[in-house]
Image (cartoon, rainbow, N blue to C red; front, side, top):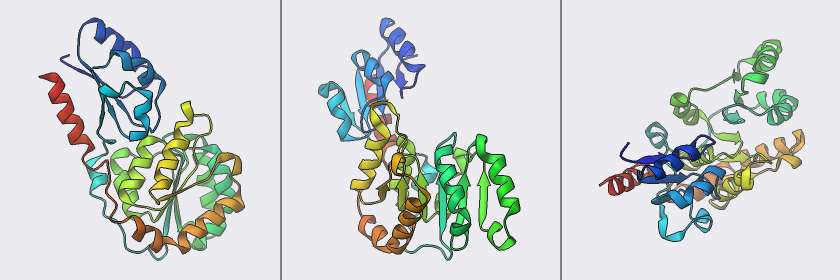
Length: 267
């Protein structure tokens, strides 16, 4: 290859190392507000380091860093902001690509209460899907019709979920947080407590500073607390959205900035 672009992950470092031995230019991209393991070890071999958030610059050689943002799917960029929630409002609950049993357990306790007032789109992950599917089938019809449960949601269809969603309950992975901030949907973020460098907490705090998210630590996650946070966001939904509606977003042009950097290095 003429150039190597690494986004981290356990398989990335050996590729970066071999590329450096072969004198192939390397760009790494750090999606989080801190630094991932692979990118930490890859940084000395990179020609340039594209960062998504200014907070992560302190983990890298400053002269190599270029702030580009976090690239997101063009379909998500096209999701318009909302002026008011739906009637009834829709809550999108996800634990990330694999789901979260910790979040699912708490949601199970308050599900019927939520369905009396909201539509719930629930991405459970594979491990809990059958249990929640059976739960849906056991609900009274007037509640069951408000509940959609999925083992997985195709990433190419996630824009449709965001178009419907009024409130998002989620882990705080870099991509998910970027999407939530971009589509301007008020959120409750529950960071994975054992992520490297506590990166999910830093991602969630970044969204919180922008005014779009509330951060709920897993150790504080209870049914009553989650229900209270949902009600608080719902009651203040229009105020939250109005406060962030005109704020600039660093990720809208992230893909084009990254491509520009690649073309510059590949010359």
